Length: 171
Ligand SMILES: Nc1nc2c(ncn2[C@@H]2O[C@H](COP(=O)(O)OP(=O)(O)OP(=O)(O)O)[C@@H](O)[C@H]2O)c(=O)[nH]1
Ligand SMILES: [Mg+2]
Image (cartoon, rainbow, N blue to C red; front, side, top):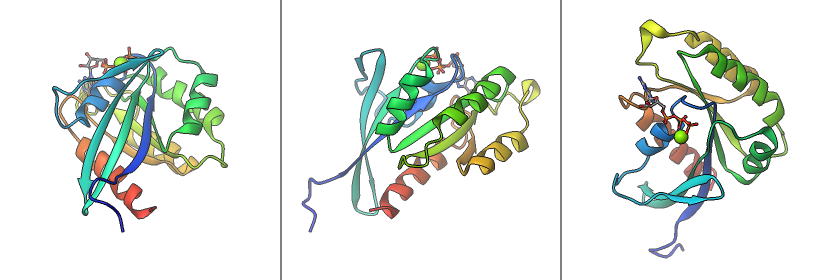
């Protein structure tokens, strides 16, 4: 039987071009906005404990910067339970760069769940990447797919709740 203080520990990391909204998205997963964010070797991270179905889940949320290279991403992906690949729906280049990245990150042997995220969906008049294109890419590779607005909080609760459900299901 699990003790009262026991929790499931998992690691989530976010990748994507500069300015797509990675930091804003991760911050929206942090329940207490006053909590400290740690910095180590050019990565920021934060521990967030969630409680769901009487289970405590401690998620280590890793933020990265747009300029990180593939080798770094590959190493980090291997160590993570969840990888969020974020692009900006108003920036075609950020989507094309994800497409290039995906080929490199796909390693069937990794037990990592990859989630494709089209952020800034609130800026509909500036949209450059249609929803269907994101969906198609996610289907092609068997990723989860969300369109979010980290700024307006659209679909961010759904995303993190689905992550928690998946963690609980796989225990
Ligand atoms: N309209 C809109 N703006 C957003 C959204 N998410 C982030 N932004 C804005 O986009 C800008 C960049 O957001 P960041 O979260 O700093 O982007 P980042 O991906 O962490 O950038 P780097 O750390 O430089 O790689 C900021 O001005 C945010 O306020 C969103 O969903 N909608
Ligand atoms: Mg950032």
